Length: 248
Image (cartoon, rainbow, N blue to C red):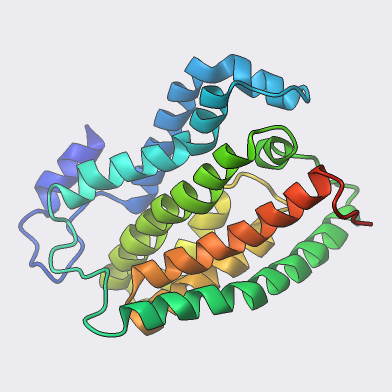
C-alpha cells in the first residue's frame, strides 16, 4: 500500500524528477518477495548449506530469485508508471566501445576488490570475526557449472545493474545529485549481498560501476563490467573445484 500510494502522490511531479517510491522501500520489497519465494526451494538451500549438491532447477531458482525479484519490482513500480520518464540506458553513440571498456576495466576492478576484501577481513579479524562461506561461495563448489554461468554471469549482471545503476542511481541522481547517487547505489548494492566481509569489496565495485555508467551513459557497459568481474571469480572458483589450480 505504501508503495502504491507513493506512486499516486508523486505522479504529478515534472518528468525531470524521480516519481516513484523510495528505492529503499523497493529494495526491501524485493528482498521480502525473494525470501518468500525461496521457501519453494528450501530443501535445495539446506542441501547447499550442508555441502550437498542441490537439484539443477532448485540451484537455478536459488541463485536467481533475488535478481528476478529486483527486476519484477523495478518493472512494476518504476518502469510501468514511468517514474523515470525520459531516461536512456543506451548511449546515442559508442555502445560497443563502452561495452569493451567495461570488459577491460573488470580486471583492475577485480584486483582492487580482492585488496579491499583482504583489508576488510584483516580489520574484522581484529575484533575476532572470521569469514564464513556463504550460499554463493558454497554453490560454486556444488552446482552445475552451466547453471552457475547462467545465474552469475548472465542473470545477476543484467538484473542488478538494471536495479542499482538503472533505478537507484538515476532516482537519487534526480533527487539528490551525483555524489549521493554514486555512493548510495553502491552501498545498497553491497548491502543486498548480506555479508559484512563482502561489504567493502562490493561497495568498491559498486562505486566503479556507477562511475563507469555516469561517464559513458551506457548501462550495458556496467553490465559487461559486472559480468566479466563475476566471470573471473567464477572461473577461478571452478579451476579450484576441479583441481586445476590450488590457492593458498
